[in-house]
Length: 300
Image (spheres, one colour):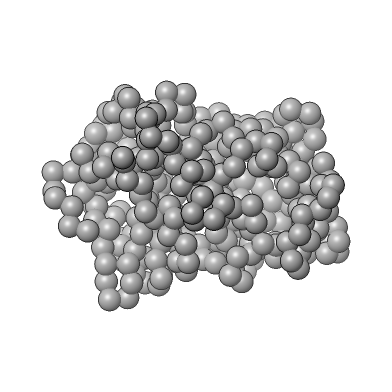
């Protein structure tokens, strides 16, 4: 049985950094995977830092052809809705997601990681994030109300045993910026109609407004995922890092297509107030698959 990267399920961390890298010109995927595999998951007196690494599906397939689902692909084409709304494709070669109890520790380890990969990859994007009011996003609503419990999360997020990539996961990473002024100008009742839940206690509307965010991403319809979303940014420029793990890619694709209205022309009402800046899929291999590429014995 393969062992999943435990940072996927490490709830309660207060500081996060997402580092996306591209291969250096002329670089090769094996060198990049080896460099990532040699990174350590360190522990300090200030608390541990969780490291989750993911790779562009095509890059991982080139070095381990049978080590991931055959149909898994990168986010290589924009998703365009019937009215022209665009979810941009910004696929990179590898992702390091670091999370911990204090930002100074996360900062130091992120700095070390960038230096360690410098010979094979260049940093393409960097975003830091943090929790807001325990479990709310910057719209003021509870985020992840439909998340499975930790006891059930592995069944949702991890590729099952006996299939290619078992113990790994498929990650959708998107950065969404919020139009805070437009959102905050809405009365609470109108905000609730946009989301499809009550703001104070996160009770789902019945029936759900068909254009509401909950209505357009209904997991009972598309399939369940495990979300680790986090707010990012400053007081004047902020949004949400969407971090969604799934055992299959299709539910993630179907939700995005539904949000932009591809099936029926109905667009997610939340997209009137928030806009995606990036989009990438990463294969998050199980630990034993990553360690095969490290000549150094794991000390963690």
